[in-house]
Length: 336
Picture 1 (cartoon, rainbow, N blue to C red):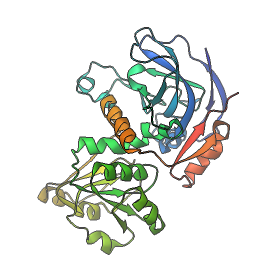
Picture 2: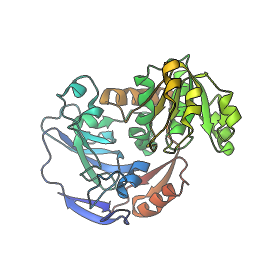
Picture 3: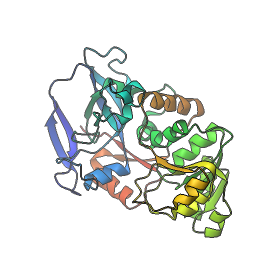
Picture 4: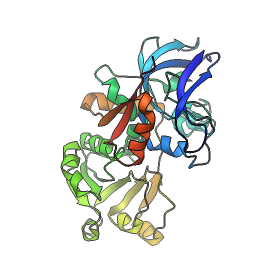
């Protein structure tokens, strides 16, 4: 079967129409007719081969929403015509220690949707059925796609760090990841502080769930927050004065990084003396993704999006690259 897509033939190249043959559907797979696909900054990184793992021709896209059009003969829990979402991961082995403990996202034998395979800037995509998640009935399919990468990226730290409703949590960066994190943490019951270099974002940050707003260009304001937070969630991919941010943690607090930040330098003594820690995480396993969808459904949480037709994918990618996205971009499949 032929799939129509948009692909780049070289690093940083223009995305152009591209057809490829998909072959036989595997027994444990589903095929999805794509209706919407979000754009993540990882798509830009992969397009430019920033991580040295991109194979060309390259079809980006891993925040996918569509209807199942075909199911493998071992798939019993999904049916044709059902709306599902697909994120970063496309397959895991299911039998390693990580998978058996629910951390399928950490499976070293796993496959990712856009790593050495073709992604969701297309009319169809395939994945192992465990990674195709039914969309709750009250969720808008137009806005749901970014939850499957951006959303789970900031939901997973809440679960992994056992964040409590009584905790004080700061979110660094109010963009594609941070604006969803504010909603999650507010609905979780936390006292939430938004950290941003842009004071113009304060009003919207508070509307999204922030109880306080701190302009991080004001170093005195950061210092005044010493020993305040149980977790500081860093959603940006920039270098920071890490010691200053570590100083805002309570003893036992966690600096959790989900943005692809450059190499960091920090004072180890502050970590040791305060029993503080630094960590990070990717997306979550299937169980955590399902939990996130249930949580979003219950609390009516959705990303703030802009929409572009898939045929204008290069304009959409440039819009994101120039930092103009508010806050996530979703492509609508307009193949005829």
